[in-house]
Length: 243
Ligand SMILES: NC(=O)c1ccc[n+]([C@@H]2O[C@H](COP(=O)([O-])OP(=O)(O)OC[C@H]3O[C@@H](n4cnc5c(N)ncnc54)[C@H](O)[C@@H]3O)[C@@H](O)[C@H]2O)c1
Image (cartoon, rainbow, N blue to C red; front, side, top):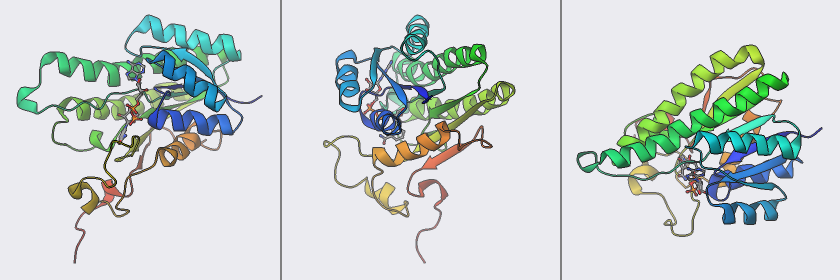
């Protein structure tokens, strides 16, 4: 039987590429997104099942897991990808802004991970959970007090989930994308300060993040858990770039 997966934030961008890559493997995929019209469009295009979800609403997340179970009869994989990348200078950051980013990115990842893991534990056949973190969770970045903290939180949450879910055969890893071009509105090249520090020196493509997520979600990933895989053109390993 092919894998049954939920990908959150899958209507567009990196989540869409992950869902598409899994569908190409013959997996049954729930394209879960806040934007229901876009989720329906994407699901129709890639041969998946659409579902509206608000990842920061526990009731909505529970309904999403039930929808996957109703559609596929089981749940093998969750990819927690839904997130917002809004930025604001630290001195101007409002409490509302802080909570919106932390709630969507970090609380959303907790709620989706817990609901999916509970389903997988009941099934008793293990599973895979992939959380989408970011380079920004590994070091500071201008305007990223809330975003970076949310992604750093996801990395630590991934480690604890890996420890506590191991006894159930559920492996939990994170992929941390570097700057990835998801829209034509982005310039052709990343900011000069980013490019200068990145050995590969270009934007990532959503498909390149999807390949990593696919591996971490697959049975081929069988002895790696609690790991953060940076898909970032070498950005996080770079030090002095001249000489
Ligand atoms: N694009 C990058 O350069 C980059 C770099 C590092 C990490 N990331 C991470 O990758 C993930 C995807 O990024 P992207 O660039 O594809 O973003 P995107 O904005 O193109 O897509 C995000 C999707 O998440 C959905 N979403 C937002 N809030 C939601 C909610 N409350 N409930 C359900 N769905 C919701 C949106 O509707 C959208 O379809 C995010 O977690 C982001 O932080 C992106």
